[in-house]
Length: 212
Image (cartoon, rainbow, N blue to C red; front, side, top):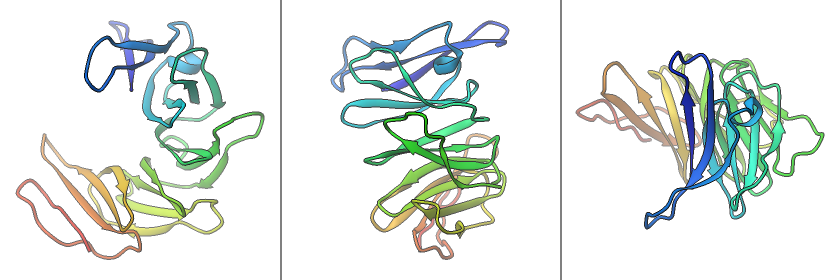
């Protein structure tokens, strides 16, 4: 599954769609599209799936959206977001970063009239996001941080790593947090650290691979 954004020649406007293809290849299926819908498709960006639905951020449109995997009319879960970036899900909720607003938020997968819950605010360009059973993790590109917060946002964020160079994508497993760092040119660095935090260590020819 992927998002597909098409810009005009002047890049003054754009439209997009949600597509899929079998792992073995074959015909590409357009699950949802609407060239006139800025709500769902002006710039679809990050995407995740569960057993039945596809979820994505619409960065320019400022929305969080979902549609069933078999296709149909999208449902808007959240509106009036400043610049929603990356997205993650668990069994019940959808989580995303908003680089423009400096927030990490969540909302129920079923949507409804409930407003999103802001888990953390005052952040420096939050980008990548990941979630496990207890915490939400994200990168802050401008600030050079990797942070986490309780999945319900009941405590202040914890800094896991700082002084990083443009941390971007992020992933977690049972023991560690992993992230990418974008430096100049085509080279970059990647690293990881335990979810409890600490000082990464290690080297790599094109940057760093770090672990504590």
